[in-house]
Length: 124
Length: 107
Image 1 (cartoon, helix red, strand yellow):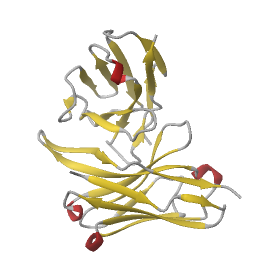
Image 2 (image 1 turned 120 degrees about the vertical axis):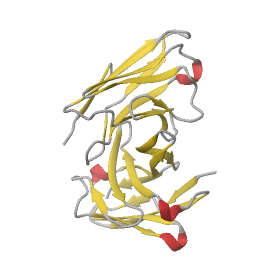
Image 3 (image 1 turned 45 degrees about the vertical axis):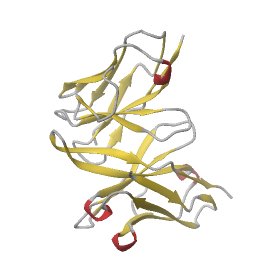
Image 4 (image 1 turned 60 degrees about the vertical axis):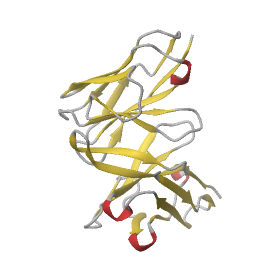
């Protein structure tokens, strides 16, 4: 069974820093791209960042580019999100999500497994 | 960036009703569209991928159709456990973008 367990959320001051972690199990973590998606209180879903499986190349939403860094430790089956200089508008539940690129119908691209999320509150 | 719209933003229906949600992309995305369900207090769950493919384990009352810029998501017979917010999501290009969501509840 695929499991994604986020940790590291909490209260952080604007301009501070925080590191989110996501422990993955039940699948070959090395072979999967991973992504972070967030949801502000009472709002919709916003994609944050992506890291590819083999190249490790990364992409970011404009709203976090230059402030957040996604990384992975394949030896520990763990995904990270380093949040630098967070702002009040970064307050959200952050979900760790597996990206599936191969489906029974052929190639695909979807977010097929989600963690339960970790809440980050940015406030002084 | 590709923008996504959904309508309606919310709807009320009765058990057994047919429910239809539409999603529109700001440019042609072929069938690069997925649908997710999010129940209150829970993480989202993939229901439909590539516009019309039912995810394994998802009940057959859920379906999707469309291509290009216009897409439809249908619940053929609404069940009590279907109360949730539904999101479309395009992956044709980065940034991946979700629609604003459609909240489905009971009359």
